[in-house]
Image (cartoon, rainbow, N blue to C red; front, side):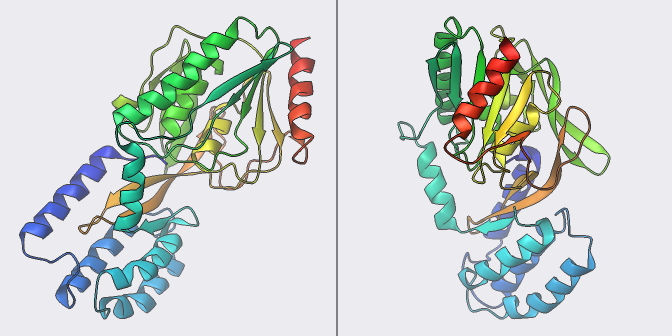
Length: 321
């Protein structure tokens, strides 16, 4: 999930202003109506907001939502509207949902980190999903993966497999920081809105910049020139698809497995005044060749789960021989 941090900060400031003005977090009447208005205003930045479908959906839902007794009672309807404005990748997270993710960011919190295993000169980098946003959690995820890759590099004399099969997404930029040593230099993946593309740029194995902001960069100085196979499945989604797209158009890179979930778009997190978060799709993913994505990534070699690992190994061996 890509976050426009400047926009999020503005929305947070607006939320604080509303709170100080006396609007209660879950009051009825005007408080609910104001909340619904603010949420719908944010949705107008969605990739499908300028359509008759969204305008009609708002016209139908808005009166009913504003008549709800509490803000909490609007969550389901607002989430459905968000999906019309931004597509299936968009939704509303309740304050409880947001708190649950915040717990994953707490210092010392336990979460899966990238691992590497090596056999017969081929290393498998497994990238799990990752929802973290706080610096400590991001650094732990990224450094775990890069350290594991460094340790395996000397014994990896054929190539690499990046396993994204169980990665349902989250924060793309730490994942990209781990995979960056395997990527060619240059603009590798972007987020496109209109005619504007914000790029993730890689140089010498490090991520110089991303659409996520300055704090998503990673150090270079560790680059690997080797064939790469991307293992994908129907679970591979969102941020994991961004990682897969980063390899599109790279020589000696191949996708193996099953088509991905098809959430090949970028999201912004918009904070609402009660702590809920609107996850709104505002951009399309684009690869280094300029191809714009909006749907599942179809593998170059389609293989069912089970034989897919050996198929990926065969694809790497074919390219390193």
